[in-house]
Image (spheres, helix red, strand yellow):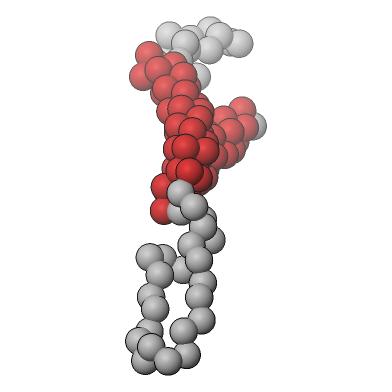
Length: 98
């Protein structure tokens, strides 16, 4: 309690905290939505073919070794980052109330 506060009176939150309480979850939600859209649009690439050529004496190296495209990987990474932001915000909010 400050010098000018009476018993039971609380100071109003600062405007920067109000702004952060709105901006952080919105950024997290936008990141999740954008990540899911990018992951959905990135799946248009076909899955590669594997072939067997025993007499060619050359090694075939595919572009990436994952079964999902790089666009899908990027989209999922952005969505996970957005979920981490939302989880941090929720934990911070619950922790401040106690």
